[in-house]
Image (cartoon, rainbow, N blue to C red; front, side, top):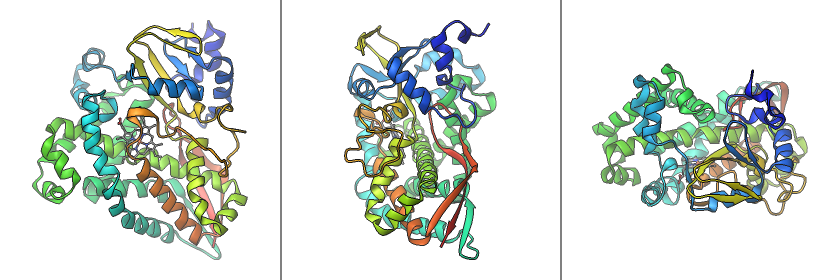
Length: 408
Ligand code: HEM
C-alpha cells in the first residue's frame, strides 16, 4: 500500500514531495492550504516543510541551520560505485559550504558577479538583447516565436559564458549538464540515472580540463577569474565554475519566461510600461515574487529549534518553500495578484542571509534590459495558453514552452 494512503495530511500535501508534481502543476493553492493549516509541517516522509514568510526568514538567519548537502561519505554509501566520482565536486560548491570556508570562497566569487565586472557586462547584455529581439521574424504588423528557446535561453547563457570565458562552441554542453543538475535538485542526486550521473562526471572533467588549457588561462589572466584560478585548489575551482555555469543561467531563464508570460496575460500593464519604462524594475521584482524561479531550498539544524510552536530535534531536513513565503498574505496584500505597484515588495526570491544569491544584480540587469528592449520594439504581446507549458520540478518554477505573438 502507498505510504500516502495512511495519513490524510500526507495525501493532501503529497505533491510537495520531490518528483511527485504532475505536468503543469500549480503549487499555489496547495501552498496556501499548507501555510494556513501547518506553516511548519513534519511530513510523512520525514522532512519538515516551512511555508510562512517569518519562519523561512528565521531559519535562513539562524546560524545553527546550515547547508544540508549530504556529506561526501553518506553519498558515497548511497550511490552506485560507478557514479560516485562526481561527489567531491558537489561538496566544493560554494552553495553547499558553511563558514568559515564559505566566507573565503564567497568573497572571491563575489568579484566575478558583482561590482566592476557587472558594469563591464552592461554593453554585452544590451547588444545580446537587441539582437535577440530584432532577429525574431516580423510579418505584417507583428510576429511570433517560441520565447523559451528563441529568446530566454539564449541571453543568460551568453552572459555567464562571457564571464567564465567559455567558448561559444561549448555552450550546448552547459545546457545539457544543466538539465541533469536541475533534475538532481528536484529528486536528489541519488535518484539520477547512470547516464545523468556520468554527464555530471563529464561536466567536472570539462572544467578541470579548461583550467589546464593555456589559451583559456591567457584569456582570464587579467581579470577577477584569473585571480581566483591562481589562488584556489583546482578541484574547488572546477566545481565552482560548474556551479556558476548552472546557477548563472538556469534560474534567470525561468525569471525571463515567467515575467514575459505574466505580461502577455496583463495587456494593461504592458501599456503602462510603454508609457512609463522606468517601472520595469518593479515588474521584474514582482515577477520574482509572484512566480519565484527557485521554489525551495534546504537547511539542516545542528541544534534543536522551535518554529511556530513545533519542537524540531537536531539534524532534521528543513525544506524552505520560498515560493510559498513570497505569497504569504501576512506580508503581501492580495498575494496572488500580480501587482508591480506594491509599495513594499520584500520578496525573498534570491534567498536571505549568508547564502543570498551572488548573481542577483546580474539577473536583475538581464531581465530589466530584455524587458526594456522588447518594450521599445513591441506594441503589444500575447500568449495562447495552449502554447504554454510549466516545467515539472519541485525546486524550480519556469516554462519550457511559451508561444508568444506581438504587434509592432
Ligand atoms: C532570477 C535569477 C536567480 C534566482 C531567482 C536565484 C536564486 C538564488 C537563491 C534562492 C539562492 C540561495 C540558495 C540558498 O540559500 O540555499 C541563490 C544562491 C546563489 N546564486 Fe542565485 N539566483 C539567480 C541568479 C543567479 C545568477 C545569474 C548567478 C551567477 C552569476 C547566481 C549565483 C548564485 C550563487 C553563486 C549562489 C550561492 C551563494 C552562496 O552560497 O553564498 N544566481 N540564488
